[in-house]
Image (tube, rainbow, N blue to C red; front, side):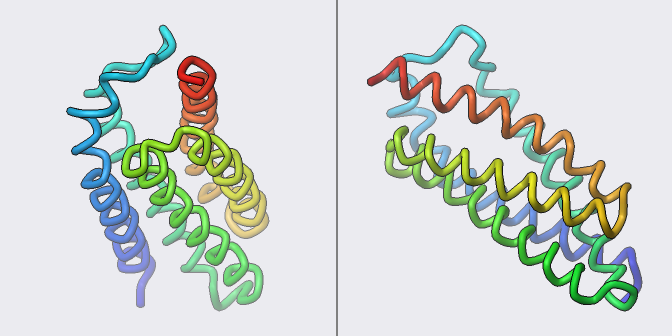
Length: 158
């Protein structure tokens, strides 16, 4: 399989995870979410879909670039892609915990774990392909912001 098919494969997977997560999110956006206190730096709802779409595309390109190095660094690529899949699952789990269950405490704990796994993914990817690792930096920055936002919502609604 050539590099571009590998990239396309992961972009589709990431966008699918994002889409499935949005299904859990949509019902709470109209019901539970407007009723909770949010910090002044909470972005408007319309910001999230385009930001996440761009981030999922960048994540998919990053993972595809790593997968393309499988013949050169098999064990390290397998390790990196394992971390990538774990962080992608944790990403989806956060939406379920926060929006699906309306459990801000569990979502706050889980997003810290997510951020740590993203950082580990970045470190492994950096050993394989620096460009692929760089594509994860905006994602890490956004999840860092989301972590602060989630914990702030927890504190405001405690």
